[in-house]
Image (cartoon, rainbow, N blue to C red):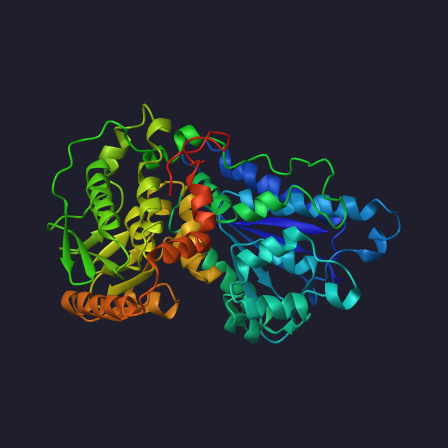
Length: 511
């Protein structure tokens, strides 16, 4: 029912035959078997680093997949439950694959068939035939919570989700591209597959560590993995929960992202930042011409400044602007410092999280005036603010973890999800390590505005700060509302599963 072909560094998984490729245990088992082969060959190599690869899934005929095999499912009461279990297992397998995945959708993708396509990192679609269609409403089936978790992660526009789920709209390739669901549309089946092959080769050339890629994807799609354990439409919410994926986020924590743990042994705080009061505005500046790498010294200096800001805030309306000197806002963690902490990661993993919590609980609006590069943890520092303004003529936003072989922690992915609404933009940052210019970031809604110089960026931040101050909001209410908006971030800050494991008791720090 499907074939798996290896072409150089690419795997091509094809659903064969002219039919509808309805998902039943036979087809799902065949796909699962193919994915296990891909995973085995991608992780077993005589060298310590297996060669990079990518997977393309496509189909013959006029259907990518027309969803569940309903005739088979309804023939025996337990068949639907079995089919759901097998699809969830396939989706979990896609999410844990140690390589980029591309769906070349050359025909209709309906209901569970659309879910199969959305399980890939990229979707390319044929322009002249086919639509994306969640048919459940039209045929009287309840949509599973795990379907919605995946749709929520892949379809960023609330209006587009409503069209799919609550209007059963049939989206053409053109409409799906416009709504950010599909990456590109092509004129024929051959052109769609050709474009997928070109994209696959481009991704392979990045030579990313497959294990790190899989771990980062699993963090990005953590909500989906959490929801896959049961399907309330067939299992009931109290049913025994099957373990569906063998590679969990907690696997190999000791060898991945221990550099996101932080040292309790504090250094004496040096003057790495300054805090100036200008009327109703606080200006926090990372000083010096360097990269402003984040270590315990800089974290302590910033937290000390934030404590002063919070202590001095009273009933008067205030705002905070954070900016930098030199060509870097922050180039991320001080890796040499972080690697020195590997002997005791657990007791130190909350230091950066405490800084994030301090920003989130600050009783006033916050603005990051990013006048240089903001990379990795430096970008997360910018995202801790309510508004990000950016210099147009220098600097980019860059989550470098994939390029340097580091797993993104769940709290960081939660922060990015809260700040980057477009799923394609989140994927570009976390699963493609794209370097976004100010113009790119403004277009994607990540950055509030872009400006022509350091001075222009800071001036715009000051103007915005003064505008916000004039609203005379209650600082306590502002902080409480922000904490509600960023609840997912705060919840994930308690344990850092990339370092500690998901069962560790959380930090007791008060927000």
